[in-house]
Length: 148
Image (spheres, rainbow, N blue to C red):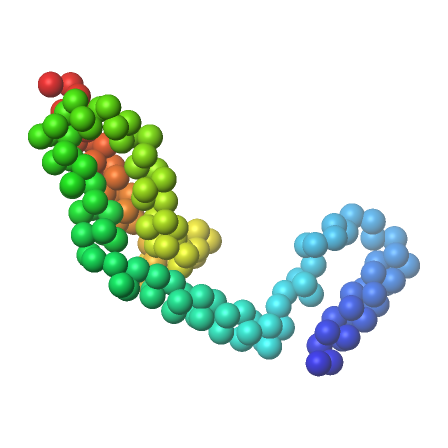
């Protein structure tokens, strides 16, 4: 691949030109020549697509009640309402982050916080994601029931 040899040569030429011109305020890593080549972009996109495709298969053999955060939290809410002492003794508030972590991570695989455009499943803000809203609603319901 000639691009792997060409880019370092271009950088070396520009570095020499800067040194001869006396331009001393150049910061390494800020040059536009460090952008990816079209080949690298294609390889990255293929790799990213493969990861996203594999991530969609992670929970395909799991019953819907156990891979939907809203449904999981609903079960815990029902438990808390029916058996508050048992719920409290189980320290569920400490267990939920570990329980929900794999589900949230799987949903975050495709999230790019630097993208501004909102597609069907790519939410620009964390607060707009379904898992965030489900946890927020669960927390609000928990706070309401605690204040009673």
